[in-house]
Length: 152
Image (cartoon, rainbow, N blue to C red; front, side):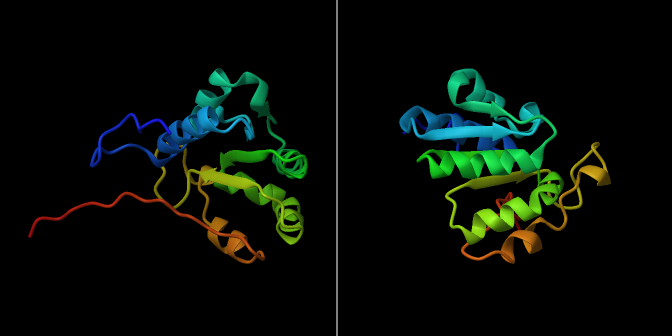
């Protein structure tokens, strides 16, 4: 596995770290595919897409279809990572629910979460994502955050 291109303790946006990690995973596992919903330059899936164009699927603004396609790819033995802004995953809730019930091996990545995402504003904030996902069977929610040190 390639080493991360940043140093321990260095600050990096979690979405950028995801993009770099996805690209690295794609280098070591040809079963990994990536899907994005027209925000690849913000979720950093564009890194994967440039390196592995035959394993990258642009869904445009069709999150339901993206999640459905991810479930289909998983049923075919692929390991799909589907990414968009967390608030837009709510559009695909029924597809997410059915994928969870069927035990589909998909990885959903929602960026732009919380109440302070910067200039994109409140329409882009994912606030209900944890509750939505935690309500599904056999779903693990990972919520990376920056840890800061405080000198007292």
